[in-house]
Length: 105
Image (cartoon, rainbow, N blue to C red; front, side, top):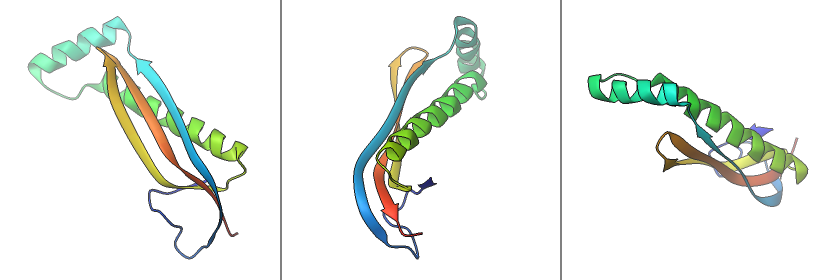
């Protein structure tokens, strides 16, 4: 599956537009990692636990978006965007969305 943030595929024609596809997940860290993140907030530094959580969330959201595009018969997704929001302390939602298309081979 070709995944692009651009609205076209350079050098290729878009044969058909299958529509909006998206994937999302809500992830949270355990209390131990949350406590360590709180400590990092006081002394400074990268919050590795949250960084890992968001990386995992991006992978899951993109994977679900790809699954939806595959079900629609697409071979590419254009205009891909990622969005995140805080749901609660220590929890975040990640959404991936774009337009499923068929591009010439």
